[in-house]
Amino acid sequence: MKDQNGNLPPAHEPTESNHSWTLLFFAWLMATSGTLISLFFSEIVQLPVCVLCWYQRIALYPLVIILPLALFPYDVKAIRYVTPLVIFGWIVAFFHVLVVAGLIPEGAQPCVQGVPCSEIHFTLLGFLNIPVMSLIAFSIIWALLILSKKSFTRT
Amino acid sequence: MKQKNIFISAVAFLVLVFIAAVGVYKSQKPSTVASELLPALERINAPVKGGNKAKVTIVEFFDPACGTCSQFYPLVNNLVKKYQGKVNVVMRYAPLHQGSEDVVKMLEAAHLQGKFWPAVELLFANQQRWVEHHVSNPTNALAGIKTLDLDHEQLDRDWQSNEIAKIIARDITDGQTLKVRATPQFFVNGKPLIVFGYEELVDLVEEAVAEAY
Image (cartoon, rainbow over all chains, first blue to last red):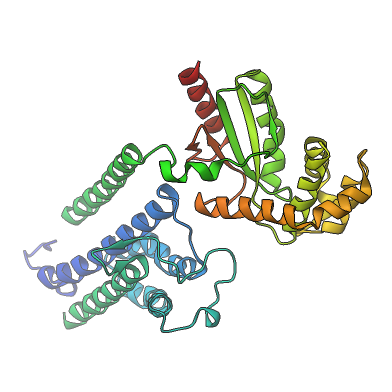
């Protein structure tokens, strides 16, 4: 990364930009793990996928492809493009968690075909069901995107 | 360069974890229906084809309006023919399509007159005449069944009777017990067809025949 005079190029100060890269990399790691886990549950365990799950998938799966393009080379603009997806996914996940918790009545939510979204098929440690996992994943991805952008603008 | 290596290692790691998880899950998954659920597979007098002494029984939960069920019908027939006397197939109703509940009642009424198989064959073959956009039209289905040689008045009385309503309700409950969410759903000697497909069904039947004979 050094130029002919042995100085580091000013725009890409290695420690700082590495930091933003790493944060974005972890956002990708989170999105990809979430994608694989959701595919594992639907395709291998064959749990039914309700409508709200599909909306969250629509927000999550593109990140697996888009974020690597923002990593090589690091492109801070991509954060601007993926953030709406992440916010959309977060809102749907939050709504889904409320439906499961019974805070939003069954009738007020859009699941009419086949699989009710209020039904829970899998729970870990007593509270970690799939919608909660999704909400946590979207929250972490969102936080990582914000941190990555901050750490980049600071340089 | 270092970042690329990290990324590639992460991809490889995730893929390996996924494959390992699939492997572990498949090896641990019980391949037979839990013993307390086994009675849900059977109902006395359910339509059956292929001989009473067969040691291998395919239980098929089906909806006459389901396109895949219709495509599988000749394939399942081939299996019964291929293992003459060794394999039979029991049909259970899973009316998942709108309007299908009445149609399976008509099928059961035809069954009372010994005409289940011609009736189901006719419905499968003419699905486009009585299924529109995945919604069953019982009136058209009934008209189709009545082209068969059976007692029309008896059929009309039977399909609306309480006895038949109970039989259908029993099949629906059993389907729910066995978590039948899509049709056709096959069970071969109590083992559910996990990965859906004709080849997979053939393998499952072959395995059961090899075990039983």
